[in-house]
Image (cartoon, rainbow, N blue to C red; front, side, top):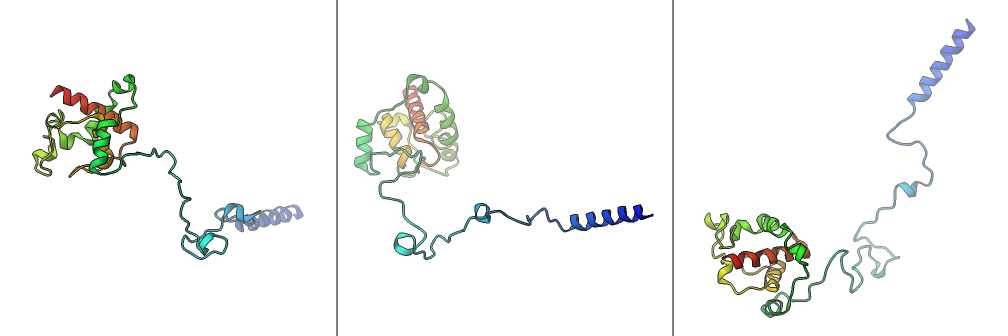
Length: 181
């Protein structure tokens, strides 16, 4: 009989102890700052930073990781310089990879058309008017890259959608379309 009481008491204590445990919140933390770092408000005051505020400007001359500086400015003079001087860094294997066509069909075909004649779906539906044919333009790989980077007239910049390498691939494909017109 004593044995049954002992077993019942042991089971009762086990249930009581296990019911106090909460899996969603640990009971004890060793060095809690390692798990829950101090959150700073971006524009709050702090004496440890220059100017007394948390939000700091980047150091002069810093660039984003992966960013490639483009030395031609967004102006007519920059366009003319790019048209005359800017050359593609692509190798022949990259130019013939077919990736330029794929990118053109994603980003350009809706306005410029499949053959580069300026008669894409948006032009046919009169959403945009005056999209020129590549045949009518005096373009080079540098001018195409410049327009893809900064945009021109109604065409916006595609620098956010396409990396520099992808813009060069599209520029090469546009020149191929121009030669076929």
